[in-house]
Length: 417
Image (tube, rainbow, N blue to C red):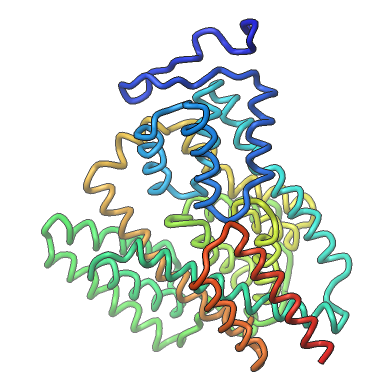
């Protein structure tokens, strides 16, 4: 039942973490449209998206205090998944319960999902047979490679704050190149850091040494394949089969549960499934999907829609997207209060810090393979260098799409020359 002003009785004030917060109980339709509006304006990556949500709901409309917002944001910066999307789900849930959280999350992701579907259809419909289109996408791939390198540097700057974290990151990178399954690398990284921070340095060193020996054996047996486990021919351009819808769903779910440290950290998991193990797309196509996601207002992990589409058509795109966003919904709708209590426990936090450092190592190793796929000529190397310089020099809400469009224009000029 709503009051005359459209609010829900009793929803104007809720007790969260011992403090009263003024979250209005908006009608469901208005709530959905509010977060749909956020989704339509979600340019500039997570920092800009979070700033937009903070400005409207904290600074302007006073839904919660700044201190409360910062505490909630801290939870989602530790948990996997896109923080801005999880914040939308959180505020929707605080306004109208779990139904409100579901509608808010759907509203925020829907514009990017629809746009990604359209761009993927155009990509597959017109293909890259034209020399002009091929040259443009080749130039854009170089710019995307620069975006990934910048992301690795930024994530690493925040995640690798001591020698133990640097050590497990290097170990995870070598393990990724040697073909060790990432689950072993991430669990080992978390345990090593947790032991070290509890003062158990000797057990931590023994575990790290054992892992190092295992990685060395794998390197001797299999060599170093920086795009992940599997042969280089698969990563470079051999498409061998199509996955089932269940495989796409599992790939999305697993990737969504492992995106620690930022949306770019999903890259090694999806790339391994789609390019190396499943081989339903090439590294070049993978870079194209990342490029398309940079042109639209959406969390970067919306490029999973592209990956799913290439794996299983329209249904595959939906299944993959549902899989990769489900953990972000579930963490908030089912367990926010629990995670807010648990994540501040020193042991759990240390384990997650180690996992995050391990993910940085995985994405660094995967980036080497993507660089090999994207930098195929002197022109693309030059474009990569220019794009990397621009990305580190300037900061703008529209920097990513501008860099991608600029690379496309450069590709057209190269074709005309």
